[in-house]
Length: 165
Image (tube, rainbow, N blue to C red; front, side, top):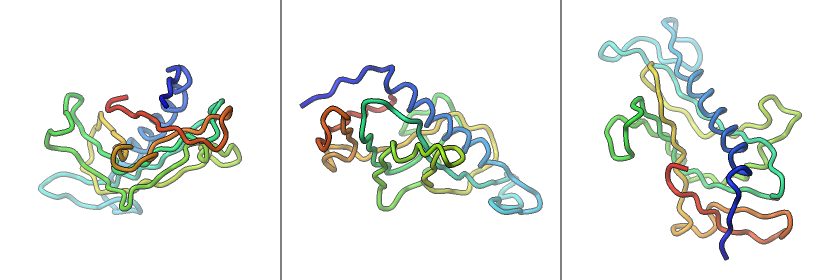
């Protein structure tokens, strides 16, 4: 069984998720000379470091009971032209990978809806232009990424998550 999803349905939730991730990226990379909470004071070979902390949230979506993704890694890079094999990527590895129902992350009673922490890592202070969520492939773990349509409760359908989408 295949699932065709109208891009407009996905644009809003994923745009919102990416906005939250980038906000976390921009605020999490700060550094402090005083070594306050969440920073690494000092320098390493002249570079200042901070701590990147990544959290995930999502907005409500109509027509779905579940939208599941299994996050294996989060990767960040400073270059807009870097591909996945280039040097310079900083990686947060989730061990074990975490299956997350994005619709569980839209509790309007909580600030920024609800957040799930994906991890943190020391990171050189600077401007980062790429943030990638690396998902477990459905070919490795069946239904690692899936949806349950409101019109078909209880039926989990594989979600195709091609790279760069």
